[in-house]
Image (cartoon, rainbow, N blue to C red; front, side, top):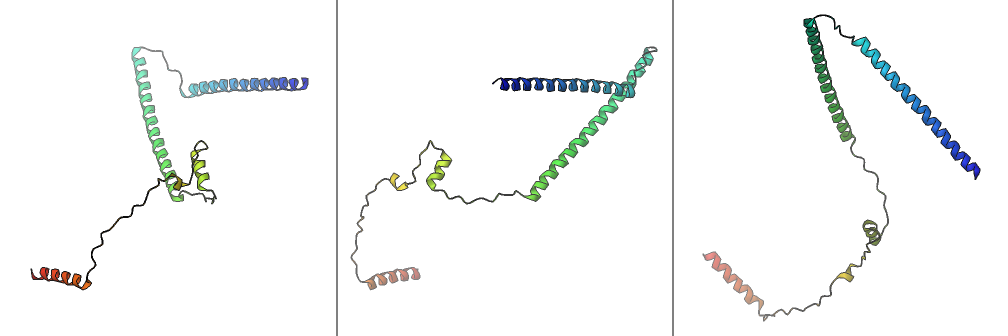
Amino acid sequence: MSEKKMTSSRRHHLKSLVLQVAANWLEQEKKELVAAKEAYMSENCPAPDMSGDQAALMETCKKLYALIDKIDEDRYDLEAKVGKADKEIQDLKIKVVDLQGVKKPALKKVRMSADAMLKALLGSKHTVNMDLRANLKQVKKEVKEEPTEAVGDWRKNIEDKADRKKMFETS
């Protein structure tokens, strides 16, 4: 039992050492990033010359505003290009999917009774009985009495219909 405690405390110790090393690396990366930013700014953006009268300072401010406007325009143009490229990429992805088509997986034939299928769909809480005849109401068959006409001579019936036909033909 003491061996287990030693291994778990050793794991804790190793884990804390790894975390300390990782924290040191993160701090070092932050310092390097700040140094890189300062080097870039000193190289590309020299400190403005503040000596001179108010007119010279106003001229320097106007130049800085003009540079800022130019940079904003460039940024806007680049954002528009990136947006257009993203839209084209999305359209091409949709075309690729359309060309490939949706692949339907081959379905496996499963032998399952209707009771088991309904139980799987509805869950075990619902008990389903597939004996549908048991749920039907009992209905008594009523025999309809059809009045039987006196069956006469069939030739007479045909003669009556022939008379009707003549009646329509004459009018």
